[in-house]
Length: 332
Image (cartoon, rainbow, N blue to C red; front, top):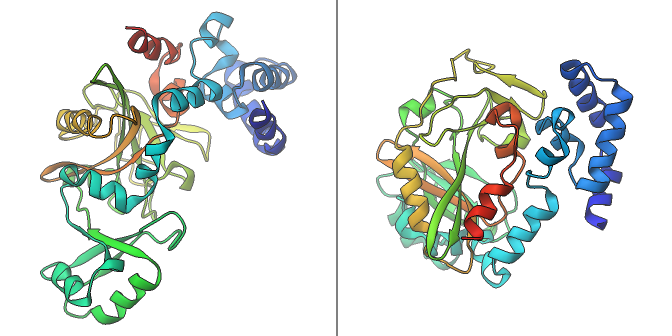
């Protein structure tokens, strides 16, 4: 319970009121009623005020509310399905690359355990490389592309990478159609799989789209997202946590989003289902997938996938949550 109370106590009152106003404007129900109902959901149902808005709980019956995956249920899935002795592989980016190298579609190099000659050879023929922290501590926050063409000082770059405990991999060049969404960022698909009885099930797929000036598609950085159909198509509006608004067109380019279909989507689902069989001690994973001209490639895996985005009423169009879908598989 302490984690829920902490979330409630640390919640921004201003943000809570903003969400309550959005619910009021949509439902025309009294704001005071909404605030009391929000507080009750936080304390009894373990559903935060933002989730209250996203799940459209103001219009949900008690029975419908009980179908939603909440904080506790999500944590229980993680603890039940994922052995924490093995989840560290997913948090250590270099270990992850080594384990899932057959599914990355790109080369990588552990600079910290490589000579300059190894590094120079890796960079040969490339224009850019991408650097990541080799662990969760050193090099924290450094995720960036580096030019390695003829004008680059490779000796200086090599020293910098070693100093900050970074490893490098080939830069991802996304599919031209995916770049139409936002050319400045890799617009990824989060495909979540559940492994049960040695069979991988796709639970849902989320498309995340960056905005102008963003180098990442991260929702927390202001990006937008939507739930994809089983065929990989946008059929409902995109959502922004920052503006608490929906979008049928890209906020910057004006591109029509409804009807957009992710290329190589079936191949991406198949890739994730195969990857889900590699480490069977971790059965519940959200795979971040980039789409290149050659097909899908895994960027990283998350053993604690979020539960709010796929249940967002405004991007799913559903009046029920995902809990029945999980229980149907897990009880089979």
